[in-house]
Length: 54
Image (cartoon, rainbow, N blue to C red; front, side, top):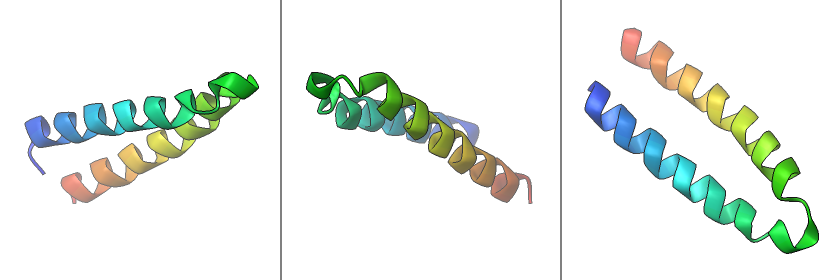
């Protein structure tokens, strides 16, 4: 995967996660949502990096 494409995917995924978590903001779970989402996101990035490096 080209680095520019990976950057676009990362940015798009970040925006998606923030929008998804914003729905929970009224319940006061925004920080919890972001924390758990970020852990999954970082795991995904690790998989992408491993795949792109071969």
